[in-house]
Each structure stands twice: as C-alpha cells, then as structure tokens.
Length: 337
Image 1: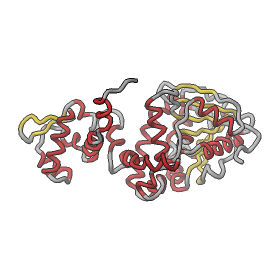
Image 2: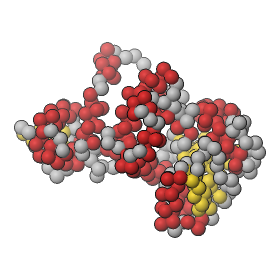
Image 3: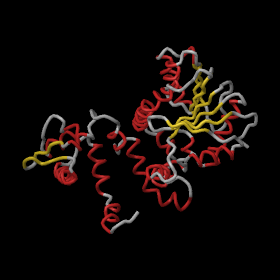
Image 4: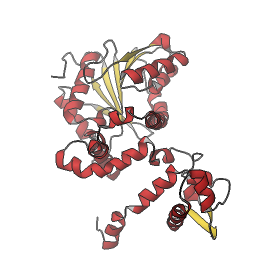
C-alpha cells in the first residue's frame, strides 16, 4: 500500500470521531427526526449550551451529517439519520459516550500504556479494570447488556441452525443473562443447559430464563470460569469470551472447559476469526489489548492456543453472520496447570 501525505493527514484527524460521538450521545439526530430545528431548540432538548451546540452542528454539517437549510435551521441528511435510534443496527449505542460503547472508545487513550506494558490500557484511563468499572455504574452496565443483546441477536440464529442433534447438555460459559442459551433451548427442545457467570449476572439470567419458561431445562451457576466450570455437559460454549483474555489465561479457560467436556465432548468457541491480513481484525486485536489485555485470534492463533492447552487442532466453521465456530474435542486431562 502506497500512502501520500494527504492520506496520512486524514488518518491523523481526531475531531470527526469525537464530534460524531457527541452528536450520538446528545441524540441530535433523534431530535431532528421530525423536522428542522434551531441550535437553541436543540440546546433546550439536550441540556447543552446553545452557542457551543451551534458550532458543533455547523462542523457536523461540513461532514455531511446535517445541513443548515436556512440560518440556524438544522436538518437531517441520510448520513445523519443513521445515528437515530430508529435506524437499523446499533450504531448509536456503540457511539454513546455515556454508555459502555463510547467509554470503550475513550479507553483507546490508553493504547500507549498498553503497548509499553503489554497489559490493558483501560485502567490507566479510568483507574479500574473494565469489568469493575462496568459494575460500578448500573446504567452503563445496562447499555453494555443492550450491545451484547444486539450482537447475540445477530449471531444466535446461525448458531441455532447448526446440527445440535448429538448434544444433550450445553454449558454456556460466561453466558451473560441467558439470551444465547435460551435461544438454543427454544430452538432445540431436546437440549438441557447450564449457564455460568458472575453471581450478579447469574441472578439476572435465572430470572430471565424462568420468565421464558426454561427454568426446568436449565441450571444457572454463579461463579467464575477462571477457577472452575460446571461438570456434566457434552458441549461447552464460549461465546465472545476468549478474546477478552491473554494467551495464558485463555489457555487455562479452554483447557478447563475441555477437561469438563471429557473425551466424548467438545468445546465450541464462537468469535470473529479474522484473516491474517484483515485490517478490521487487526484493529479489533488492538482494542482487545487496550480493554482487557486480550487478543483477537486468527485461525493460526486458535491452533496455537489449542496446542498450548494440550488439545488437537481445532476445526473452524464460518457462519453467515461473520462469526466463526472454533471447535475442539474434549480431553481427559485438566489442561489448566
């Protein structure tokens, strides 16, 4: 790839991403959804300063998100409409600086710390690790749950469409509030399930699965997969879990699940598995480093991880949604030493 000076200058521009995130956080596109409004009207609706907001709006007009049809009369463009809550996808949720998505973006200010130390940069920016920070703010935690729900809704139909006939009992490790496991149980009435997550999350999962009428087919365990996982499953599901962890911890988690599955069981890792030269995959890899000290793994990365855990070479199945299922066989050894 050959880059010109102008290309480098474009890469260095930091204002557009922040300005767009402020627009998303203030719900400017939603407030403009019913027609043009003035900066003063929008300031009253958003609790912002009218002069400062007008200056932001005019800059966003230059980016093409809004237009100023008459002096101090701002309107939506098709691009700006993508930032409304009524648009498809979850773009606004990811950009909201008051929510978990935007806060994860702000954590990228810790990239230098992460590169210097090899550990997460999130605590260097917010004074505590990601999960502790999330637990300290119920509203932010709820926004994170919404983001994960949207991701689950995109992936679960493809996951449920796989052949589960040979599975009797699936253990969802780090299964959150139970959306993925609940969907699998509804799609496959022969399945039983166990969900493991931190006690506060597990309590939410217990309520939601009961409300869905699945309590009789599903056990919920409050605990940590960093120490142990429930026995008795023949398929152990790790949905967007391993990329949160460094290789040593991920090896321990994978080995622990494989040992619980036993030689007749299997471990199913569901994540985005980028190609070696995929730019988005490389970007996600750096984000995982900053947020958690984790890693976004390629097929070769998963093969190396399985080998470190004493497991055979995994198989990788690409799903239509863009995620992949990385499958390894269970083992008789503990694999976490």
